[in-house]
Image (cartoon, rainbow, N blue to C red):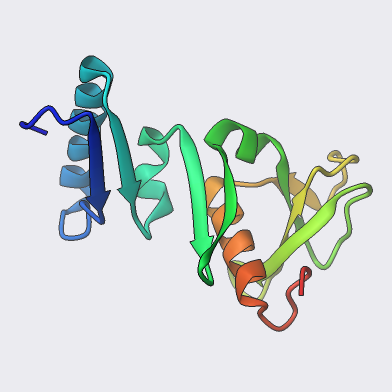
Length: 143
């Protein structure tokens, strides 16, 4: 950060930090980027660590871009279906294991979002759904 570079490429910068240090680093990074007008590209396998600091989300898998969108648009356009439910007008992206024995399916652009078996997707759900679709896991709704 001290170089005041216009573009910062950060590969897993939070990997060896404790949870408090990760949060503090992200606040320092966000403040520095905003005040300097810089751009930071931050890669991480821990979605919840970087969710607060990111404007855009790129999910990479199997050698290609699986999703590229703003965080806000990604959250607004994705839903989670439980118990193998289908969403009217929605596109099933990928299925993955949820807490316990639950199977979750990421749905994009669901029309009937008030269904009892649909809930808003978290950013982690969005990432997991696209990674599952990219891997073509057994039971994957997009395979």
